[in-house]
Length: 125
Image (cartoon, rainbow, N blue to C red; front, side, top):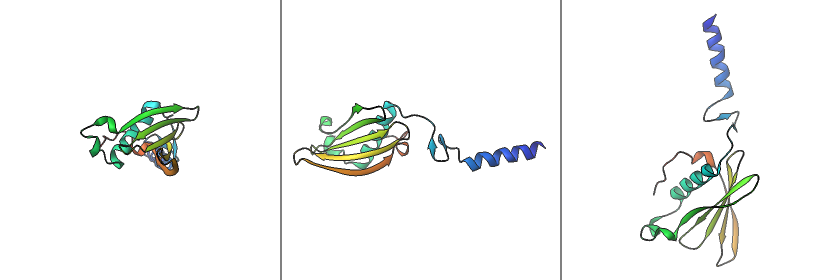
């Protein structure tokens, strides 16, 4: 009887796919400002070339922007002067990216990332 109950419980857990705070693809924890900053910073350090900032760290930066009821804004400033605005959904971590080149007055949607893919990773500078 105990083996049957244990096997049934194990099957239920496997079927619901409960791992990494997810159940059926839905995140269970709300995103904090610290999580938004960490995930975006890790993404930026992995995706953008930070070598120009080796001698002058102020050339590139990741900073917190404005906050709304539903999203955090995190801003990446490149050594070229371009800005990438990351809009992190507080409920599910979906992050929309918008690139802006102030000197040319150009703004483009740049895609999305899942913030959870970049949390807990050490930045690779």
